[in-house]
Image 1 (cartoon, rainbow, N blue to C red):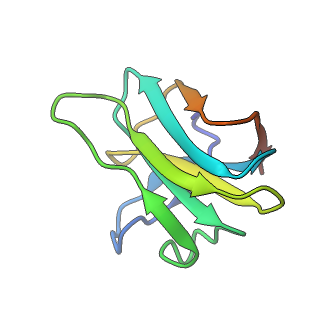
Image 2 (cartoon, helix red, strand yellow):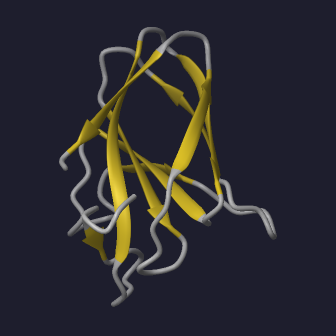
Image 3 (cartoon, rainbow, N blue to C red):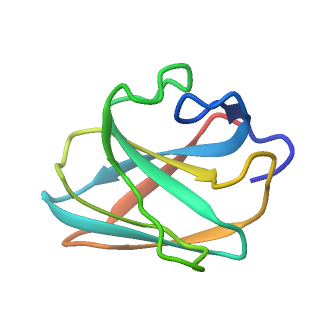
Amino acid sequence: MTEKSPIYSRECSKESFHYESIELTVEENGFYSLNSSSIIRLYGYIYRDQFDPSYPHENLLTQSSFACNKHRFYLGNVLEKNRIYILVVTTLYPTVRGSYQLLVTGPSNVTFKRIGK
């Protein structure tokens, strides 16, 4: 995430959080897990069909939780082929930016397509 990454107000907050949205598609139905790795604290969400930053609770399928003193998130859910999912990666604290990596495991390949800028 960079200075040019979009921002939104997460969880009824008045503060601004940088985020990236990534379209996910899978080749086979099954359970998939997504793990992040970063030096900054991140939070992750998976949406079904679409993500609208003005309504962050609409279409929400699952959200990550944190472990104390860890800078990564974990998401796990059953995903279906021929369906669009949106992964939203955002920072735990407002105005923070930085890089991250994702590790995905599941029964088939996952295609990532960054949405927007």
